[in-house]
Length: 283
Ligand SMILES: [Mg+2]
Image 1: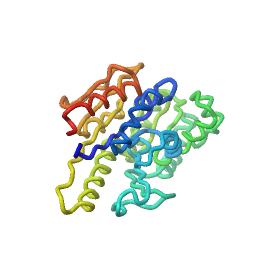
Image 2 (image 1 turned 45 degrees about the vertical axis):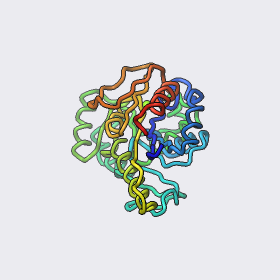
Image 3 (image 1 turned 30 degrees about the horizontal axis):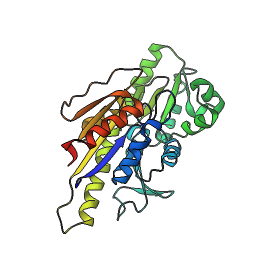
Image 4 (image 1 turned 135 degrees about the vertical axis):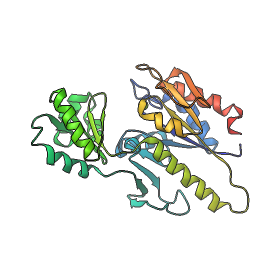
């Protein structure tokens, strides 16, 4: 294998089982990737502390991408030089792609009088309230509350108000997304843009390490189950759609080098990576 392989992976419903959040069915494949020096790079909507916990459990030391492409965390000295446009934060070089939460909280504050009682933001909720609303444990609710780049809202108003509110926020530069439970206010970023930037860092650093010989070609494999994974699946060299027990495969524009698992979650994750590692695509 003389190509450098990077595995970008969604977490919920992909590397983590949709219902149990377990990764057991992927354990063997994770070991195999590590043995082959293949980086496993989480690319998730989850927050920094949520992903750090999973990295610890899986013993991963590669970079990772948080909050739907809002920021990339690279362990200090992972590359020989600090990438341009990053800042130092608790042992990581951090590249962020959109304004932080305070920016959106200020916008919300400026508009709260016109939408009195129409929404409740994550920041206004206690951990107990959030746990009750989501069914998360208190511990996990506390971690998911630590969003840095966007603010989920529990919408309490009517649809007409929601439409007016959305229009105002969009005009002020926000990206407004209706999720399963919450209305998400954030900047314009996605998993694909962050993945492309990080792949470029691998490329540049590989060239600076080995000027004498031809640098190895970089192959990116992206795995995801949801709509918020489309941008990264379209951007990667090889796309893997992991089967979900609750929805169909989201539609992709690309048709080449696309794998769809027959198994769900982490079992499907391993199934497709096994197929790719045995194919000619990466040699
Ligand atoms: Mg997912």
